[in-house]
Image (cartoon, rainbow, N blue to C red; front, side):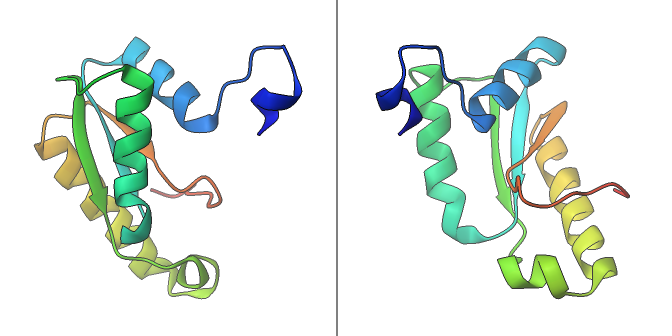
Length: 108
């Protein structure tokens, strides 16, 4: 939407995260909360990279909802995010992108 309103360069949060991940590591993966965004993220990554890439290790959805993130059991959230991060690392990612921009995970 913003790109349609300005002639200035516009980069989204996922795009900037991918660029940073590719600068600091060899392979990146995404850990996201709910399964509803899984295929959206895959499509966005593919569109940004122009094709599939060996540098994209994949995506793990940890099965948490928006309300649960805001009001749920903090320990469960931390545990699920740590488990998701471990799984994506096991798939070869040395950089993890959190696909849930609305949540601050300061204690992971």
